[in-house]
Amino acid sequence: MNNKLRNDADEIIRACLNAVLPDNAVVRALGSLKRTEGKIVLVAAGKAAWQMANAAVNELGRVDDGIVVTKYEHVMGEIPGVACYEAGHPVPDENSFIAASKALELVGSLTEKDTVLFLLSGGGSALFEKPLVPGEELQDITRQLLACGADIVEMNTIRKRLSAVKGGKFARACAPANVFSIVLSDILGDPLDMIASGPAYPDSSTCEEAMSIVKKYNLELSDRAMELLHQETPKELDNVTTQINGSVRELCAAAAFKCREMGYTPILLTDQLSCEAREAGRFMGSIIRAHAAEGQKAAWIAGGETVVHLTGKGLGGRNQELALAAAPAIAGISGAAVFSVGSDGTDGPTDAAGGYVDGDTLEALSEKELSVSEVLAQNDAYHALKAVDGLIITGPTGTNVNDVAVALFSE
Image 1 (spheres, rainbow, N blue to C red):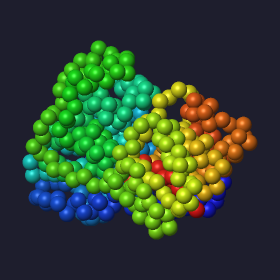
Image 2 (image 1 turned 30 degrees about the vertical axis):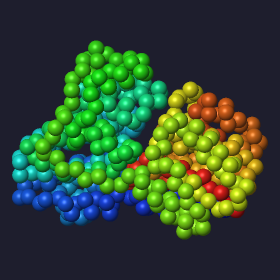
Image 3 (image 1 turned 180 degrees about the horizontal axis):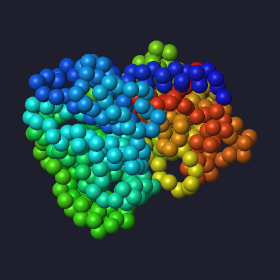
Image 4 (image 1 turned 30 degrees about the horizontal axis):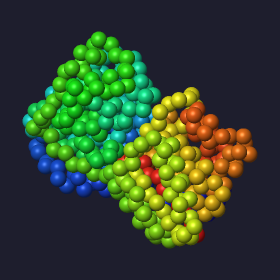
């Protein structure tokens, strides 16, 4: 392993994640909150829910009541006046259902003088859920969508119609209270009705689109689920004000700033990356191979969210697959490295945030009798990268604004 490049990668990652922590964004957004004589009730859902709620309560001084639901091991301590729940992701579990039910009870008796401060971040689709089908069926449908490689918009189009809180339904349940929503975006283009399946935003998707997704992936659904897919979601909400703060664009900008500070010339390829993870990795690697002869210190940056089609039974995530797939393209290039990291600190069902490879990785894998193509076929990037010290482990970060991949070349 090229220790200098690995240290550079780790430094860039730290700078990126620190730049997109939601604390300052939440405080800025609260400057637009209109105070009333009524109650302020806080509901926060998503991977960044605890961090956002903690920042909000610190800024406001207090709330009258509140609930946080976030991923397991993401609650970092008590928040005054707020009950904190941890639940399942990417597949919802019983705690997801309990927390959403508690939130609905909390807002059910509010008046027009009251305000619901709704703090939303990616992951909320699984973490904040009250299903209209049996929980086991919803979990099965979620697994089907994950396994077939459906993108986040397709997944959320289906999940909205099977839920009592998604697709604007939570905001409708809050009425007549006003909802002040602060959103941390984890979807390309920041579509407010798709982030965490849009609990407090009018839904733009249609029943026809939902049915086309069912046919596209040949989903197995019950009669009840099919009936719900034909029921339209709220298209107008008059009790909601929304502020969007934080996105993958900020993540890429932070990466570029740090790379420039370290002497690399940053080149932003895209902040809309959306393709197979392994194809993105091969592309990132090929860029280095194409430009290595120029001898210039450079960093090519791509932000977004790739997908993985499950063909094996291994362990990994999209960022790990992206990095591993780049290894053959940069093999033998001493100044080359590719890394990819999820801003939330978790990549797939693993404890890693992403993966790192450099010009020495392919040889190191070969010495351990590991083939990149065979590992990818088994979707087992985690164990392969672990064997060559290529995992990136950050722990929960408190934010969630997609992923960033960087191809580094050091002269």
